[in-house]
Length: 354
Image (cartoon, rainbow, N blue to C red; front, side, top):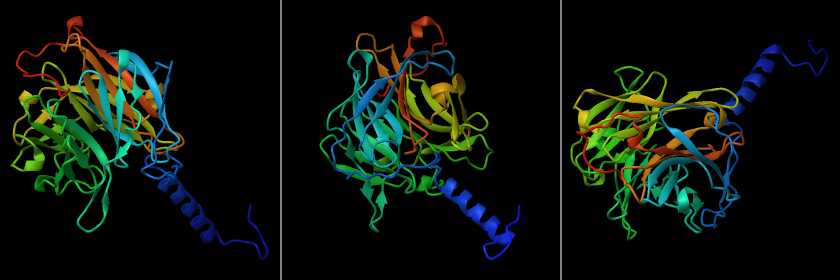
């Protein structure tokens, strides 16, 4: 009903107000809704609570879900976990898109945050701007060296176990989108690196620009260029290598709503089949949607069993986007090739990036 008199608002101004309010909601999507702002100092210690969850809905596929936990902390910068990598057979390292790392121990397969391990590792560019959007992690199991892929700058940083740092922006990544760059990175057992863009290339909606480096990408060298052929509407967000040499790729689909909704899939691919200029194809083995899997899972890591390295667990971590409607979740699936769920690959070499 129209409002008459001095308080009346012309229809045009009313539409502008509605558009302004809608814009505020969209800004609050990251892609979550109503983002909470950090209030702590980066250097403050983070007390992290790991709470078991009984919910198991939303899983279909080859793998068996064997555990789920929620990670919480009053620390204002806690959350945004967008990468995960194994730390031997008894731990994980999670990375956040605010430039933090968190160590998790796995005593008896149950996660526990390592006290004092929540730390800021963001970089500073030559112009003084901060580089904090950490989206992918890789690790050398022999030296403990970590590599991190940062969006916005489209660079890869290396963190030596002794504290030495180095970084490089590969020219082959220069044209990748600043908001969907090196989201996926995995160090293969033979020392090669696979880096995959979240954004899609010119070959079609399902093709993602990808690079295969012969060695440390921070040291340079010309990589093999190819593309990951992902299922329609899904984007790659992380990867991990299995004991038989094949790679599990975590895929995500976003439904932009209020709040945002996410579907997740896990695909299997063989790095032996990567060819320059050709699509690298992966087979979906697991779909995760609804229930706890309506959250934004962005990290995956295989952790080998100490008793039998051919077996182990596949861990996933969710990015809460600092949203009041999303959570930092950690889930575990069993991996037992002897169960015959998936065909073995005799040609793929090596062991996983533990």
